[in-house]
Length: 311
Image 1: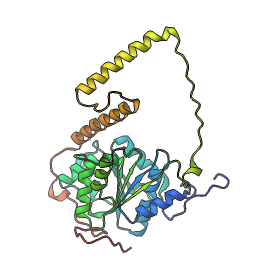
Image 2 (image 1 turned 90 degrees about the horizontal axis):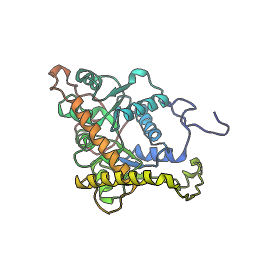
Image 3 (image 1 turned 60 degrees about the vertical axis):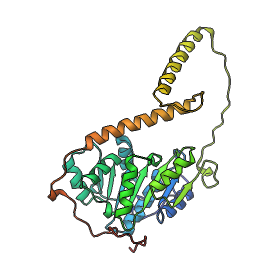
């Protein structure tokens, strides 16, 4: 332990692992009582907040389960590793499901005793549609990279099914990049039935103590003459690619295309490709009646009664 550093204390947290940060604790408290959208810059601990909320729910409701979703397999693996590092639960309580998981195995996990399930949203949606999964036994659903919760994305269908079929649904959406389009942000909030938005920037007083200041001094340097032909060739190649993207309708708007525009478009295209792969790998025939999960006796049921948990 670093001198003077304090760590979060909870029956389900390993000691001296989770640094105590006031803003994380405050956001987690709010997220435990309302469907919440958390917007935090990268590296400020969104995963820690989700683990704090999950640990409290698992401690208070011994028959509840938590489902953590992320758009890609590497992210799902990363979340499972992070939760295992923080939460004091047996190894068998952490299950992983992706498009690579066979249908029979997925059925056994959904029906099994694992209290924490980490999965891609495409697999969750497919298993809901094919009757392998009921979300009524889950006291918390975590949607990482939740700015994707629009239109036909799997997150939207999963959230809708959860809210309709769970008596006391609790949703936690997390993102570092909600976008600048207010209509899109509002759509995400509607898709996830968000009741509260928790936003922090690096300038907020409760966040500033954890930011390492960086001083940037821009210096403009003239490019040596021998590099100019290579620069012109690269610029021509880039212009050609941008024209192709515009022709296909993938780049719209202003004439000038920034580096950020291209990075965001690349991320979106990679996500769509990964989503298609996960959906293909997750598809299979409907399960036999014996493999369907029975309705559990839990904190959630199909009633639409307003939220009001009793431990």
